[in-house]
Every structure is written in C-alpha cells, then in structure tokens.
Image (cartoon, rainbow, N blue to C red; front, side, top):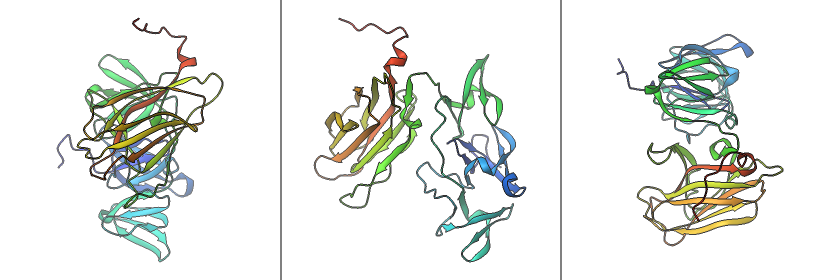
Length: 319
C-alpha cells in the first residue's frame, strides 16, 4: 500500500481551474447526468458531475501538459481525438475515427473534456499539501481552516494539509486569476515553452510565472473609471540562469519598464504605476549569446487598484 504522505496518482481538473488530487473510479449515469466517483484523502469519497470537469487525469499531469478538449492522452502513445464512451475499472472506451475502442486503463494518462476558465475573481485560493488547489471563502475556527466551497459545501481542514492560503482582498487582482494570452514568437531554435505557474518557496514567494526568452505574454486587466493602479512583483532570473536577458513591461502600448537582467543577478522588486490600459504585456528576450537554462520568474505578480484601496489607512513613507 501507499505510505500516508504519497499523493494519489490521479486528479480531476474542474472548469473553474481547481485541481482535486484523487483516485478516479468509474463513470456512472447517462448524458448530462454522468458523474465520476473519486476518492481523496482530504475531500473524501464523492461523485462529481462530468459537466463540471475540464479533464480526468488518471495520472496527474503538470500545469503545462497538453490539454486539447475532446482528446485522450496515452502513456507512450499518440493522443486520440474522440468522445468518451465509458470509464470502468479495467478499461476506458473512446468513440473515435476507428469506431469504439476500449483501451486498458493503465495505458491512459488523461481525457480532456473542455478548457478550464480563469479562477473566480472573488475567491480565496487554498493550496493543499497533496497538490490540490481549491477556491472558496475561508474563515478560521480553532486550529482549523474552514472553507465554504461552491460544490463541496463546508470543508474543515487541519493546517497540516494546507500548503498555502491566499485571501481575496478587494482592490488586488492577482495575475494568475486574469486571462493570459501568449503571442507566438519565432525563436532562434524551437519555439520556447509556454509560460507556466509554479509553486514558490514559502519564505520568499508563493507562486510565480516562469517566462522564457522570445516570449510575449499578455494579461487582460480589469479596466474602468478610477483604475489608477500599481503593478507589483519581484522579477528574478530562473535558478542557474546562464543568459543575459532584456525584460520589458508594457501597459497597452506604453513601455513602463525595461531593463537588462544579467545572469546571476539579484531579484528586482517592481512597483510600476499603471495607466488605465486594457492589458499588461511582459516581453522577455535574449540580450547577448544564447545559453541555457534561461528565463525569468515573476513572483506573486499582482495589480493594486489604488482607487479601491486608498480608503484604507496607508503606511507613511519616510521623508
């Protein structure tokens, strides 16, 4: 049997961007009533409607694994586009160009139903030690974190299963919860990997987005009257970075910040005033010879809406 700390190999990814680490059981029901049984150490045994899922992960994949809707991904084989027919203990059947094919369950990595959407904006974000990610409203009761969750109802979690908690504060927009688009760039060799979010180190940051050279990434900003804002983050070269890079931050067409980030340089705190622009753009390119590894991490990037926050007491700046 598995030792207590080992995360279960599978997961489900929900349309709202949540990840529940769990063992996957069978799909039951027909049509819109279909649901999959899951078994999770933290969330217990539940039935989850397929209509709420982005993907079923029989082997949990990382955030940047390919996830094309209507596609079954196999271990060591080509992906197969098709429609899910059944999920049973021994096999998973797909209706595809070759007809209905049952595949042994242990050969299947995941089946993707739909694309996940950005996280609900008003929610707190809860990361669990098993790799699960939940959104909800949080409170505290004694030694427990209480989560009011849209689907799961009230969850009471001991702190030893909570890896981090990021509470929603009116006037703070985390970039991770904004829609992100990547502009294709032709690299000197292969196109760079797409930017992806990853866990940080508890002592200096929670989450970071890793961006490789020859990448332009855009985030859709919330706009409107009195949207005077500040973009805040810490920009760091990836661990072991061997290339010098040039990084630009733009709001709409206006360049807010541009700097050479030398290999091995110290992290740079960013606090940039934002005009009322529709999008924030980060551009990363080589500034000298190509060398690998390379890239930047934008740590805990967020936008402060000053109009929203200035009613709250401000800390005084020293003279």
